[in-house]
Structures are given as C-alpha cells and as structure tokens.
Amino acid sequence: GESVGLHLPTLSVQEGDNSIINCAYSNSASDYFIWYKQESGKGPQFIIDIRSNMDKRQGQRVTVLLNKTVKHLSLQIAATQPGDSAVYFCAAISGGYQKVTFGTGTKLQVIP
Amino acid sequence: DGGITQSPKYLFRKEGQNVTLSCEQNLNHDAMYWYRQDPGQGLRLIYYSQIVNDFQKGDIAEGYSVSREKKESFPLTVTSAQKNPTAFYLCASSNPANLGTGIYFGAGTRLSVL
View 1 (cartoon, each protein chain N blue to C red):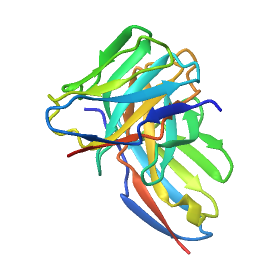
View 2 (view 1 turned 30 degrees about the vertical axis):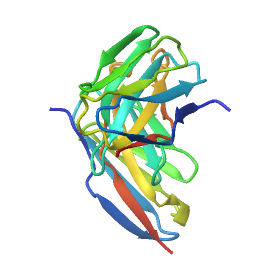
View 3 (view 1 turned 90 degrees about the vertical axis):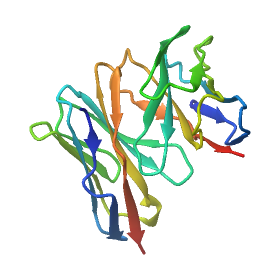
C-alpha cells in the first residue's frame, strides 16, 4: 500500500544548529510534495513545496531536497530557533491532487 | 486576508447528537477537503469536493456527511453513527487546476464527546 513515513518521531536540536527532518514516500507517481509545520492545537502551516522535476528548493532558512531514485525528501532548517519547535510532516501528491498522502510527523524540539 | 476559517474552535457532542463543523474559504479554490487528525497518526481523509455540488468519500467517511452548495463553504456533519468522534478536524482547500500552489489548512476544530 501507499505510505509516507518519517524516519524519526522526535528530533532534539540545540538552538542555532541545523535541523534535518526526513520523509520517505512509496508512490512513484507522486509529483508534488509539501512540508508543513504544525504547532500544538493549530492547523498545519505550509512551509515549502517542491515539484518532482526539481531536486532542491530553498526558502527562508529552509531547504527541501528531493531524491526520486530512493523516494526520499528532507527538510533542512538552518540556525534552528525556539520558534521552530513543532511537528513537521510531509505530503506526497499525485494525480493533480487526486491522491494526497500525509506522513505522521516528526516532533522537533529546540533546546535553548 | 485570504484563508480558511473553521468554526467553532472547540465543540462538544452529546451521545446521539449530530454536530456540524463549519469551513469557509476565500481563496477561490475549487477543491475542499476534510481531514481527521488523531494523536500519533497522519491525516486521514473524510470527504473531499472538487467542485460545487459534488463530493466524494475519503478513507473514513462512515458516520460523516458533507454538502457543497457554495464554492466557499464545505460544512461537515458528524452524525450519531460516528462512534468515536473525538479528534481534531481540519478543513483544507486547493486549486487543482494549478498544481504547485499548495494545499492550505484552517486552524481546526477540536471535537470532544460529553
């Protein structure tokens, strides 16, 4: 079956360090991917996305890397701040939003 | 501000009662979705609608119903047939005609059973 999984359920990093959150997907037809940040009790917030014709995309302090060969994507957060503490999860999309699969999430804890 | 508005933020249901969660969007998106979020699990799709007056069951539609009479609105009713309704409910929308513009979420409604 189709799945989108994360390698680590909890990630603790020191403030100022870089964070890397990983996501594996199983559907090779997935052609669009989104990373979300969800703070406790709130709705998911769109962080950054990437289409399958790209292997890297950068935003402000965030970078998403896509490796279609091994069906893996990662979210890198530079100079992690306490405000980055949240659950992060990925979404894999295929068929023009016909099929959207979400990962269970990684909890990022930033240690001051 | 463009966005998705869900109400209420908190909702309590008595046994045997139907309750309706509101979702309104002003993003001019054609597609709208309802997801259920339980602790430790990924989002699970309840219902989705690609256009007005049309909607499809998702993976966990039993005990839920929806309507899509207007493009902006996609209310979800949790019926008495849903025996385990306690969860965080998220509404989302997207523009399927323009892949790469994302799926956006509301702030959620937390439903609890009295």
